[in-house]
Each structure stands twice: as C-alpha cells, then as structure tokens.
Length: 330
Image (cartoon, rainbow, N blue to C red; front, side):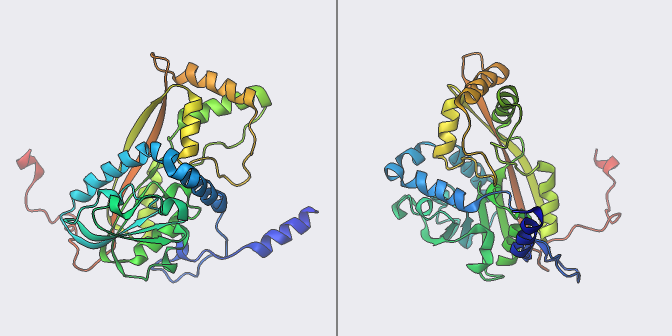
C-alpha cells in the first residue's frame, strides 16, 4: 500500500475527542483524534483470560499490589468526614477497594469495569455494602453515568491503561455532583523501572535495538496540571511506593501476567527471544539484585484527590488579608 493511500485511510478513521477538550472557554474543540497508545481490546481480553482461568485462582494470588494500594486509598477516604449514599468504583476489577467499604461510610458501591470476567470474579458475599456491577468502558463514563449524578468516584489502579486520561478526568468531573469527590490512585512513571532498564539493555545487546515492553505511564508532576485542567479544585496529590521482592525476573513476569498487566501497547512485539529474556534476567539481578539473591520491583503510586467546584465550598482568603504575622507565631 502506498504511503499516500495509507495516510488517506488513517485520516478517514480519525474522530474528534469530545470530553478532553471541554472547558469553560468558548473555543471549539480541536479536530484531532485521541492518540491510541494502548490496545484496549487486547487489554480487556488479557484481563478476561486471567480472571477466568482456574475460576480466578491464579488471579487472586496476585492481588497483593492492588490490595495494598486499596488499603492506602481507604486511609485517605476515612480522613474525609462525610458519609456517601453511593460510591462509584471506576475500573474496579473484582473490587479491591470496594471490599473495604463499610456501611458507616456508604450504603452502596457501583463497580464499573471493562473486563466482565474480572468484574464478576468475586461473590457479593465478600462485600459489606450493597453492590451493583456495570460492564462498561472506563473511557466512555458518561455513557453509563448521567452528569451531576454522583457523590463520589474512586479509581484504584486502572487509569494507567486509559488512552485519553485528560478526557476521562473531565468525564469524572462531569459525572460528579457539585462538591463531589474524586479519589484515585494510578501507577507513576517510575513503576517497574528495574524491569524496563533490564529489558532495554538486553535488547540493545542481543538484537541491536529496543521496543516498548513496559507501558508508558504518567509523570508525577503532570497529575496536578491534568486535574486542574479537568476542572477539579482543592487538589491533593502525593506519591508513595510499593516494593516487592521476587526470586528472579521470571516470577515477576508471571505475576504481571496473572495480574492482567501484560504489555498492551499498540504495535508491541508479540515475541521476545528467550536468550534476550535470559540476558535481561541476568542484567536485572546484576544491576538491582538484593543481597539475598532476590530482585526488587518498584511500583510507584500516585494518589490524587480532587473536588468538583461548588459555591458552598470553602475558599482561600485573598492574598494579604491575614490578620496575624507569621513572625509573631514563629
């Protein structure tokens, strides 16, 4: 196919990104399509496959990262002294965060996930509050949630697979009621840096080039700007790490597969030579190995809190309006 025909076909396939360009300004949305970094259909199949294999037994054994992050998210939710009627868990998976909710905090949780098998992996009896499950794509949130309808939306480690993160954040804000809460956690850019560097060095050594095997992730310093751009206020963003030890790189790769976190980058290589993997394993242990022979894997977590603007929210005082000098206090 000629380059001219290929370009024409790609132009014909383009579409307008609606939600990411919504703002208070009067400028029309740009006529550009969302850049497709991830193959969402492949990711859905990966997660369906691991949730269905052996009735989800293997999937449950690798819940440790999401369970840990869900627990840390719950600490942040408990700091908010408010009871919600319904909390939406966006990209819920089997309910890592939803299982921690108690009747004192909410009456009901609405779980939304693009993987139907993962969404229905665990029984309702494992939850302490009423559960409703909706099989839907997180990138099209307003197709299932009316605008200005929700008190709180949470998301635990699902937004790193979204192609249009600014657009999804705008949709979350639009679905919230005024003074509604968004609480989220997502993998940051330093996640699995040990694996990334080992694979890159091994590929350069054995094959003379590199290709993406670990997904690109949002840089920490961009999250505040994205939340502000989406229209959230009273922002809180902080960073944490979860470090896990593995016998070798091979066990890490197996666990990532069972988590449903296999590579889903568009244009990815479907085959990596075993000698390249063996070289990567040796490089991994040499560069990052622990004294006991194990290897660490770092999961950088970005936690974020944002509120939909409301006239009833507390506003910061104007600059220069303070009545007490800090020098007198300190």
